[in-house]
Amino acid sequence: MKEPVRCAWGENDPLMQQYHDREWGVPVYDSRALWEKLMLDGFQAGLSWRTILNKRDAFRKAFCGFDPYKVAEFTEQDVERLVTNPEIVRSRAKINAVIKNARAYLRMQEQGEDFSQWIWSKVGGKPIQHLGPIPTQSELSQDISKQLKKRGFSFVGPVIVYAWMEATGLINSHHPDCFRRHL
Image 1 (cartoon, helix red, strand yellow):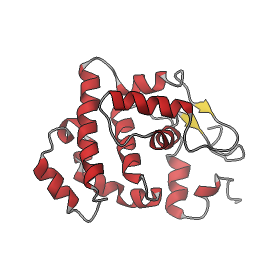
Image 2 (image 1 turned 90 degrees about the horizontal axis):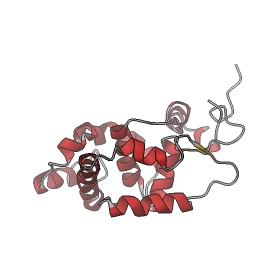
Image 3 (image 1 turned 45 degrees about the horizontal axis):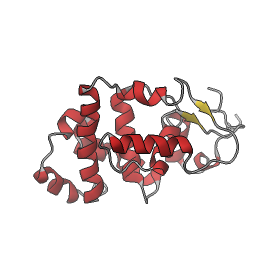
């Protein structure tokens, strides 16, 4: 059987291939899952996504399944525990950002703003079909980054936001010949 055509980044590494084929670009509508992915994309800044995928289960364990209610209660003792955990990325700034972002996420909920509805409204409720060279950011990701920061989020710059939007299916950036493009 002939291998399907994929985006070039998902062709040669089995872990990246599995991620490409099963997750990347699949629209995510669950608020908590969207928040988790944004937190993981924040951890990825300056690293390869493969590194984050390899550590994803450890991140989930360290951050209580990315339950924002639990993470929002983390203390300085939790931060100290996490910066010494060799199974995750031990960046104090990124760890603190996840805790801060859990609190911001919950504030949005308390104010009646559903995270999923909010982000999907930015793309008109359906994935943007991107063609052509893939940018690292866009006017939309810059705007969303600013709006997230106004809501109290951090480690959500426009490059991180753009990558997150692609990964969660808000933007379809699969290559036109990729078998995932039209699924």
